[in-house]
Length: 233
Image 1 (cartoon, rainbow, N blue to C red):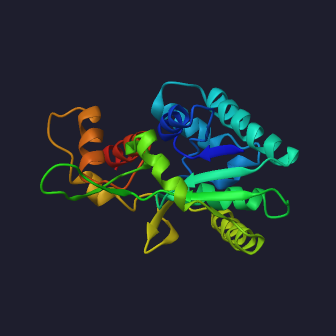
Image 2 (cartoon, helix red, strand yellow; image 1 turned 135 degrees about the vertical axis):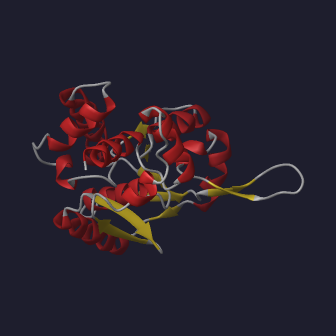
């Protein structure tokens, strides 16, 4: 069985807990053209590389395609696939995408839905809201294996159709609203991002402030891009 996640940090934590490799696909699917997973377009990778400043567009694309190749090879072999996902838009979109890859194959597909909340220890206890699966400890996440369920052909087909709709819509940004994935304009969060800007504070400080005060799981490089756009407006 191959385990697949859509948050690389969570994938590393889960691999340690499972004591085996996990395919961590950091696809950032809430942002940009989804056709980048199957087409030659490099626009998304160039944007991310420019804003992150750590790898080139070619390196980013090659890393993702190599891991997608691992997943596709496992599907082609007939291996069982287990997807760990949450209500974060990257995760939900990733699960849709895997369903589209597996809509016509007999391989077993299992899903593990991990909540974006947990009960804190101490007294009194409280419910802590999480931004992404990266905040889960791998060993703690194993508790959700008991709730793993198979994904039947009918559900794969339905989610595959939803994925196709998201690809066709080609929205610059996607958000989760009441369990639905909605495409929104690139400036959807701009007013809230702008509210965190302070005089004489660096862009790194501002990004940290935005991510802390706007806990919706935006990539830090995307926030950087919106801050640049706001500065130029």
